[in-house]
Each structure stands twice: as structure tokens, then as C-alpha cells.
Length: 119
Image (tube, rainbow, N blue to C red; front, side, top):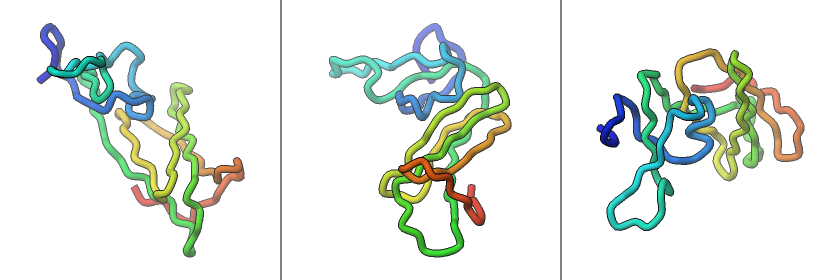
């Protein structure tokens, strides 16, 4: 499934949070019949890498009003990306295989120490 002339891969949302840890040239915006804009919705990412959609939910041990949190996620190759939680108290991330490290912050930049993190 994918564009003509491309090998195996995945169709993902064409947004920076979805592509943050993929090789820079791995994804091609898709054209949809009847649309006059390229890549506004989806992209085809060619490659044999395994992608995992993960929901990261920090728990602070008590009811919290931390709704505008940030998750700074990095991998062993030095790539970093900051995800936002907005009104939800979780982060949805799309990751290829690898080792990742993360820190959770309030909107004002204060680091939050989670009691546990559900993945």
C-alpha cells in the first residue's frame, strides 16, 4: 500500500509530531483525489522500520490540574522533540524502535516529577 515506485512503508499523519524520530527523507506527502493541497492529511513513509503508536500518561500521585504539559523526548542519536498535552493529560507519540528518554514540564517550564508513567 503506497505510492507507485515506493517500497513497503506506513501511512501516517503528515505532522511534525508524527515524523519527529523518522529519517528526514523517509516520508512523502500524499495527494488525495479532489483535494487541491498536497500532504495536508497524510504522508507515506517508506522503510522497513517498525512504528509504535504510544500513549504516555504521567501520574503524579494525586488529582492534578496539570493540563498544559510538555514532554521533551529524545533518543540515543540526539534527536529531540517537544510534545504538548493541551487539555488532555497524556501524550500520543509515534516512535520507531530505539531507546528514548523523556521529561515532563508544566507550561511555565517547571519540571514535573511523575510518580509513575503509564505507556
